[in-house]
Image 1 (cartoon, rainbow, N blue to C red):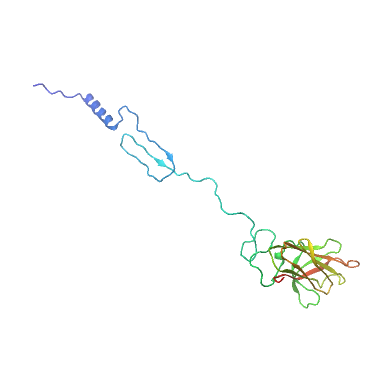
Image 2 (image 1 turned 180 degrees about the horizontal axis):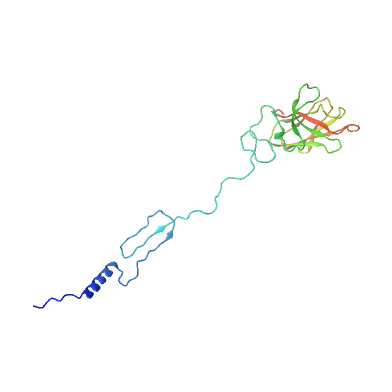
Amino acid sequence: MLPLRRPHPARTAAWLSGLGLLACGCGGGTPPTVTVTATPRTSSAVSSAMGSSSTQATITDTPTDTGTVTASGTAGARTTGTGGDVPPSGPPVIGGGTPLTVPRRLTLADVFSAPDWREGSITVPKESAPLQGIYTTVNGCSSPSRMELRFADQRGQLHVTGAQALNSPSSAVVLEYRLLADGRLVDTKTVRFNERQLVKADLTGVSSVIIEIKRVQINGTPCGTTAVLTDLSIDPRS
C-alpha cells in the first residue's frame, strides 16, 4: 500500500485562491463596470445587482424647464369707470363702465390737467356761506387759465358753472368762460363779479374738454381775479 502524500501547503493555498477568483469572475478579467445613462427622469429606481458579474445602474432624469416663463394674455391699458378695474398710474380719464343714470359731480381728482387750480371752501357773491368749489387765479397780463378733462366713451353733457370769488381784488373785472370740445369752441359766457353762469358741452364722441377762463376787461383793474367753478358735473341727459 502506497503511503498517502500530504498536499503542500503553498500549492493548496494557490489552488483555493484560483477557485475564489473564478467564482468572483475576477481572475485576471476586467473589473465590473457601472454604466450611468442620463435620460429624462421617469422616476425609475436605481437597478443594482450586487454580487453579480456585471452591475448596471440606470438613472433617468426629466429635464426641468429653466428657461422662460410665458404669461398668457394681451397687454394693454386698463380702463377706469364703474366696473371696478384698478386705475392705471397717471392722470385720470373719465368714462367707461356702466352708463350714468343720475348726475355725477366731479372733483379736482377727476381732472386730467389743472395747473395752479385748488379745491376747497370758498365764498362767492350772493351766498351767505362758503361753497365747495374749484378755483384759480386769473391774471390779466398772462395767458388764460385752463383745465382739461379727458373722457372715454362718455355720454351726456358736461356742466360748468362759473363765478368769481367774493374776495377778488376788484369787482369791476369780467371773466369769460369758454368750453372747447376736442379743440372746437362749443360754448362761452361772460361772468361779472356778482354773477354765475352755466356753460355746457355735449360729450358724445368727445375725448377732451378744455375749460378756458380769461379776463375780458382789464384796463384800470388789478390782476389776480379768482375764478370759481361752483359746479363741475356730468348730466346723463343730452
